Length: 157
Image (cartoon, rainbow, N blue to C red; front, side):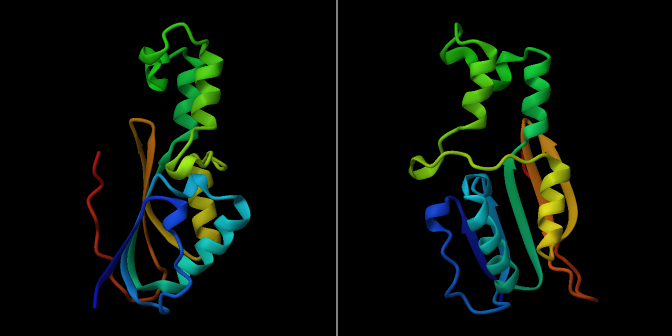
């Protein structure tokens, strides 16, 4: 059985009742960054619990390093400044840092490739690849169960 799970907001991330090792594919799209840090730990613990052997896990999150580099080089387009061309760059960066997500929650966590990889490894996930494109991190992971082949999912832009 290959059950897929997609999570698009913290409000819809209640996975406590899902049976152990029952999910074969998990996608978390622009959601992890909106969790309170204490809830992030509990969520990732539960996520690891429900992931079946060889589960493909895809995570997309904003790339903090790309945003910081865009700020440093004065790249207003990165922050979609067209809607407010007079807004100072530092405020555009702050808006990005504390963006509102689904349900009005504010971004609580920001990751670059290394910090996201370290976080996920701490919870037992093996990182196959973390890529950054257009200011968004894309992580492809698997549960680290010996002799289980992971189905590679293509990363989409």
